[in-house]
Image (cartoon, rainbow, N blue to C red; front, side, top):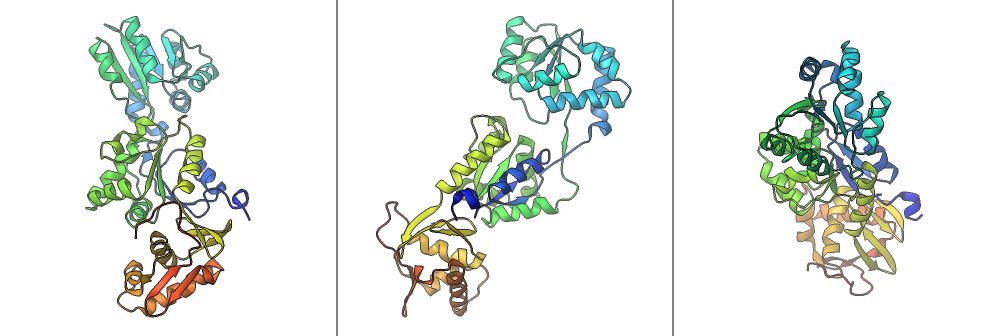
Length: 378
């Protein structure tokens, strides 16, 4: 079996905080072999039930703006559909036909045209910074600008328009609220704190803020920050999503294109690159989050076994005492017999018992063939 068969993310566990499009992201990850822990950090207020969106729509119909900025395709479509459901669809479309309509990128432009409208302009870069530059170059003093919001903060955008003399009307197409059921989010948080995740993904800044808020409510905010700073790979769909994490001193990884597909491709590169690869007893051993590749064959390993193997791999070729191994076992207590039991199960799971040598009266060691190129803690 090779990577093509078991997938580049096999043996890794990845957390998903998304609410919208979570099923799509989870399917992409599982298709590549990952185990997934889903804990939606937010819930989206349904458009048809959103009184704030209805109020903003009525306000724009009654007092038409000079400019409308459409920021997301799904958000623009949802806005039109919600207006139709409220019986205001024709009125809203009539307003949009007579304003300067800016579409942030090709996908949004497609949604605008699907509604029977024509955009005034759209940047090829999909950059809100480019949209802002165009508006400021045109001059915004005294102009009324409606901005379709989509749950993400737009740092500096609204402030720059207001500083230029514009009146900015927000159209809250998506509003985030805490999840009604906190159980999945708490399980995700616990998995991060216990280092049971190899990576966690964020597709919106409010989701990151909500996770920190929940951790604060539980009194574990500092522990969450420490885990994300040092042990759990943090991957964001784009730079705006990363802002709440970076404000905590957490390094984030982002794809060049701010899409789910490139985000998953980034994980496929980053996580295997972080794995320990060792030549042991004539075999190639790659230690991943909850499994091991032995000569390319995927070997799932129980958590206790992974705890032992992780410690041995951090000291390749060195003898590790039973006392040290016992301390690495979760909830093992003081009985060193627990080490022998877990070691027997580990050897069985690996399918190659000679990978780990017993050193009489001293402990255990990996049967390293030669000093590894990469240095490890000893």
